Image (tube, rainbow, N blue to C red; front, side):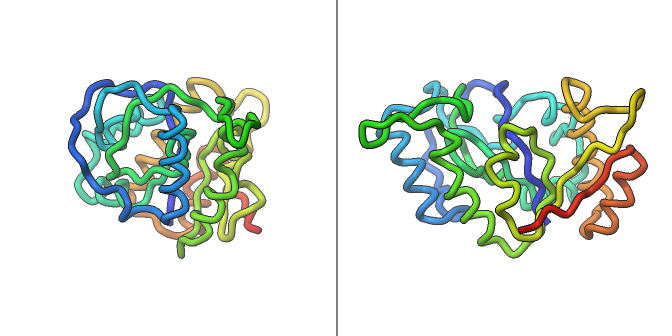
Length: 212
């Protein structure tokens, strides 16, 4: 199982200049796409590098709160969570990453034409995810989810079941809920679609199969 989360605009600053090899986490194609952005000057804030599980600091990640989950859940988090990120494509949680303020609407000039980072990354992200022998739990907002929905094998979307008056998967409260849901899934050691579907139903949420 891999849980898909969005990058967060809010990130912790700081880091080191340590040269740590991220190549063990990704295909050569994805790493080359990263390099092209760096060479084009679409880079980072100059803070050095920091592990992804420490760098991302948005609402989802603060409510997930890596620092307080148990050791078994930490290992599942580091191994089982992937982030869709406009600078880096896909990020594995143990990776060291820079600080940046890009989004998928950011324009990139390639062969004298301007394309946004969503178009730049979409094919590579889909190909990389489809190389995994896992099923995916999609907890992405529309901006990130639109890159991959309808293109992946073994793909399950956390979908809002709520009617008027119940929790909605949008806004600040929804981000907080998403972080708490991921934390609970990791700490409860759920690893089947059936288990996760049953758990989500108690929150008026549905796990919908949207596999290719």
